[in-house]
Amino acid sequence: RAVLRHALPNLLEGKVIPSVVFLVLLHMTGTTPAVLGALAWSLSAMAVRTARGQTITGILILTTVALVARTIAAVATGSVVIYFIQPTVATCLVGTAFLLSVPLKRPLVERLALDFVPLDADTRSHPEVRRFFRHVSLWWGCTSMINFAITLWLLLSTSPTTFVLFKSFLGPVTTTFTLLVAFAWFRTLMARSGTSVTFAPREQGLLPATAH
Image 1 (cartoon, one colour):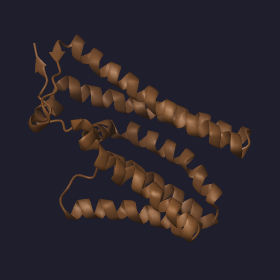
Image 2 (tube, rainbow, N blue to C red):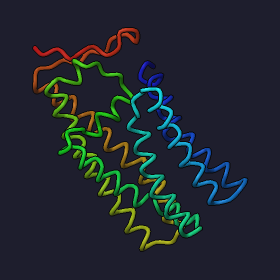
Image 3 (cartoon, one colour):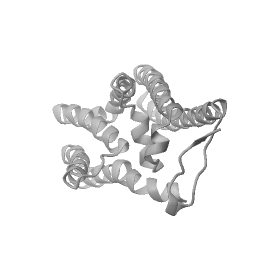
């Protein structure tokens, strides 16, 4: 429950509200206002967080990067079809962001993890936790690239209807698989290092991992 309370506002801000803004404006005013409105929401959310000195969440960063690419293409062509094609390109950009975040020593998975679980400084600085964030950022980048390749193949070889059906299935399946592997990876890595992970009550946050 504590994780959901922590994550839900980030999900609403980064994913749900931009989608709702797009759908409402698309129905009321058309394609261009819809794509600009969704992007405007994400950019405004980032500006507000910056002005307040708050951390910009990983979800918001990824959503904004994707919306920039989709908006440029949609406004340039005036086609809503192009707008829906853009998630394919965005998947590639997201995968690249994950991969590049590792050599930059700012693994993107760490930012995303903090959107869902309020890890304390001691836990984040644990050597095995830091190594996990680097490795899983590479893993997430690779699965994003695989998702991109499959989606592009579907886009070029199937009808639009078939593409939409497969895409709506492929995205959640890929994400779920990636998360399950990451979770199992984390548990295995901690067990091999002789480290136990303990979740404290909500008022105490997440206890630092304790090495035996």
